[in-house]
Image (tube, rainbow, N blue to C red; front, side, top):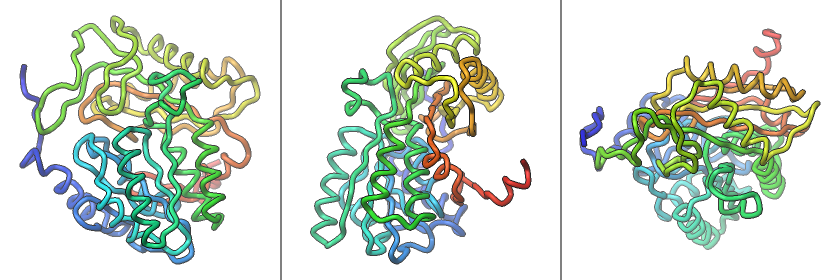
Length: 343
């Protein structure tokens, strides 16, 4: 088995070194806290509910790319594909607490649930009120009646965006931001496909095996195997399978309005993602579903995994307002004033 090539130094120090580089690149937006966290440069914001995201590194730009105005106040990393430690979570919590409480939002994985839960207890012992919102948008990982067992993947973007807007733009209190985050979580679903696995830097080995002519539907963010192995198909057929699986879990009818996120898994080209987007929009339009906004690009990656995920958020007036609200982070730049000029 050939070891994957990586542009790194010490495989065991990639997380610390990437955070150092990230902060140097975006020092106008974020600053470093300890060795494993970044926070918005102006944190803590007094009187504002603070939002802390986090999880394992290796999914960039997930977590750290969402830190800034209108989204997350901080992000804390574990090592590659591993949960952050409770002490590091607590350190980040203290750095962003502006006195109105902190909400932890993260993907629904056992290690994250345990460590964020422990950190919440430690923070509350410090007098910081904490709420916990794991998101579970990956429909491949459990049936609807066991949705709380599902994994969190790229659809968590909308949970961060809506909660962040409620806290920043509305000035909502802790209870209200939690309500908004839970509402976004309950209205988003994701499903994806892998054409090739990713690797873990420390080992260089693929997270699963795929034949040259095979693809895997229902893959997880840490390189978990999918639920349906098939021969490779044209992009339109692949997209149709993904969208139809989502629609089985999130029934939409004519007149409904949605946002859609077409996410690359790491090595997928934008050309491919735009081809997928073309078909996904067509499928929804054919059943009378209106597309309010589409985001295309890398939002949650699994190192150099090839493939794509699609996330669909069912909108109402409130969620639409929150999704459209201003934001400024390393990868999310929403300026309503400019957008209105382009209409």
